[in-house]
Length: 464
Image (cartoon, helix red, strand yellow):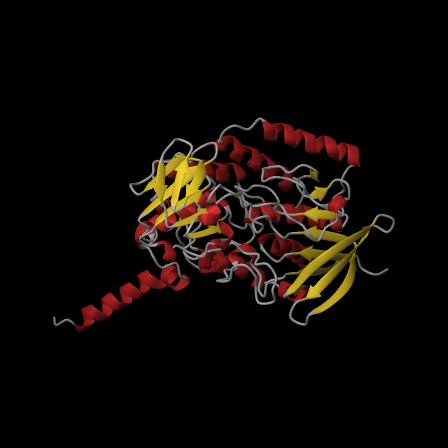
């Protein structure tokens, strides 16, 4: 018999986790299926693969990534650490708890480069359409090789959708915004704080992206940052120069009017208004339809599409946990595909989904959210041989992180945490985050060593 074939859509952290899971099984001498991953970008990494482009890419496809310059981890790295590949193993020395994007991207690549998974990825390839034959239970996928401008079709027994859900902007309309004379963009097209120096910036939204983009623009010299919220403010102790106001009502020229009756003139507007789960390559009956939440409906164990469990979704939840959650999902998915993990009948799966949905509805606080997703991770870890890690300790770190942000939104990234994988305590970064304007890997990892070398050289030249 020919081997089962597994198609993976996306080579971001979730797709790479799935590839890594199969590679781990292969190293144990197990017979793994044929795996092919399709990535429409020219490199792996998904959102962590920064591109200066907005709108469309080199081949005219909509830009997938929403990454921007000067992004630093907004949660402790110890909360996302791979349990089978530590930061210590990769960097050979302790580093701080809040690295910038290039450092985290380097870490993601480090684990993958240890394995030959790049051979399984077809870059510059986008999925146009998926047909599912219920009789044969096979997926026929229509693909475009963007580089060669070639369309072709392949057939798979399992399909893993790992294309993420932070790439299709939710863009609201406000009266008068079409007459606003300054720049209006969604966070998806934000590429860094540099253009907003000395400007009055309006950010609409109260999500993590609104918080991070607002603080970044403040750090890099915006004259003022105003955050406009729909229902609840972010509510941290903002520094002078950042304010929160109720939702925008309308514009008059460059003047924004808000629901509390206040108004202000602005130079630019950034919509941090969230993203839509969009899968235009899937037919209606296979498409996950959900808003961003901790437990999307119709997914058994948050992974298997209940109406067709050979269709697997990874990383579709709202996220406290990230890399290690994607891993836990990918290991369970792998075991199902390889036949070592059996799932119950559809009705029983539905009951399990309902149990999680009911719990999700009862959540009220951020701490509740952390505990809920921690319980979900524990459930996944109980189903596979993914290397265990101390989930309760990670949950404690998340709660400490939430407290740190409330205490001081500008200094929480200067705090340090202890790895649950190696026990290593993070090093304090050589420069306080608010003073660190260079997010390069070289500056982050080697600046202190360089300064020490320069200081030693200077001392050698001084007369005794």
